[in-house]
Image (cartoon, rainbow, N blue to C red; front, top):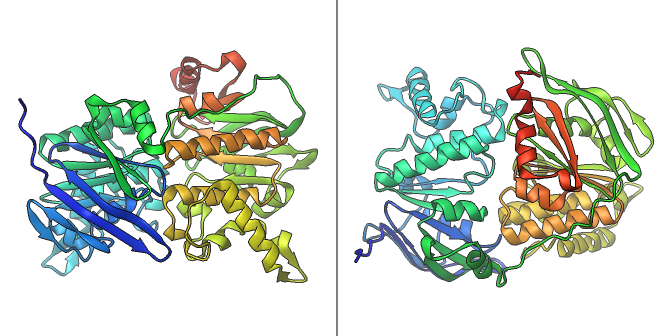
Length: 511
């Protein structure tokens, strides 16, 4: 009989009270060494709050933390790091205008004689770690020039520089990674486990949890509701414990063929620095009442295409016809006024203003609807915000609180609600389910189908095949900047999408 493992870290009776809400209620949590300790729950369940407490970012209102049997009182992340506890945040924590190597050593710089930062040594060490992660990222380039997935890899690499690591907290580490990068991460996790390091792993990807998890703890509404060993459970058990039932589905009507054309894009190109194209002469149509998916591997040009349609890349070329209007050089403000909105891939950087309240963020795209003679009708705007909060099912104690007071999933719902308030004709969502729990994903997918039923055209940019197949009427596939396929109805299968996503690479075609 296998002997029970002594936890390396323990949380006992952790309670955290914020003004107007209780985030955690008497939560116990054991962290086992050499294991992947999965923590799951819907958005707002208290997962990130508990992790912030264990990492020294937040102080509990009540409760105790033990590391290797000794009680801790953590005041900041430096104290936690010195004791061997590190965290990789769901939302990237970086300095965009600093080099990759400088980001990796921020707060832990290598110096000569304790005075001058040895950037050459930092770059060397950074390159060694990135090579171990099988990543061809230049330590000398600026962080802002990396794609979101690459930035996430740098965050992971940063923790590997820490000496005497005992507990590593990973909050949605794969949310921005390609399949190849996910496999590298999983190999790294196995390596860390073999060294006896405890991994605390938060993810909304249930199949991922079953694959790499060892033990699972479920939080619901700030309380611990269940724990189990992964071999003893399945996806249905996880869903039931998280939300109280096991059925999560989206009704998709049968594909009806051609509908009225809403958007036509012709020969869209986005030049690539150094030659070639990130988006290479892409043409497609979007119809009223249609959910159109765009699938492709990281670097395929999906995000850049929809950003070009919104006017975020003035160097792009091509022509679009939006609801009968010919547009050659789109600008963001004009596109919003015409009825095109975008939920961006990186909600923190591009979708929210961190210093504004929940209500102010919700109103960003719709202020003209409530303004007359330069004055905002506060009553009308408040009613609209309250309606949007209800429709999006945002969990918030007070809309006057800062947007940063919300969980990641609820922040995403605010971004979507903000776009809804602009009364769009074309609704573009770039990776809308990133960092979203299984229940919230279903809510968002049902919203997509609801928007289509109202006559909108919805573009869903995604990397999760099952999600795209379950929601979309048609799916375009991009590879290396090229549009390689346009599937509809029964043509949409995982096998067909995967083959099309590699088509340009297999033929040697370059963008």
